[in-house]
Image (cartoon, rainbow, N blue to C red):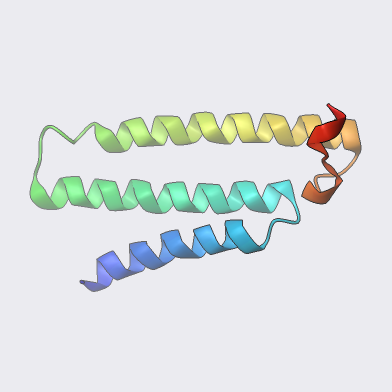
Length: 98
């Protein structure tokens, strides 16, 4: 495994472990998701450039568009929960009260 692949793999795994273990605030979960998407975007872009594949040259842009939609939806949920509950702590959210 080359150092570049190791860097992007460790970045993705670091975001995944942050998402799994540090779930106290919704904002930290959203930041971990954005870090994971950023590492996937850069890795997919470099893969497309390295192998000079013309068919997959639009895949990084599509991933970036989905990432922007995910970030927008996440921030909308963050604002809605902060207005409703007064905090963004995930422990204060209870799905059974809906």
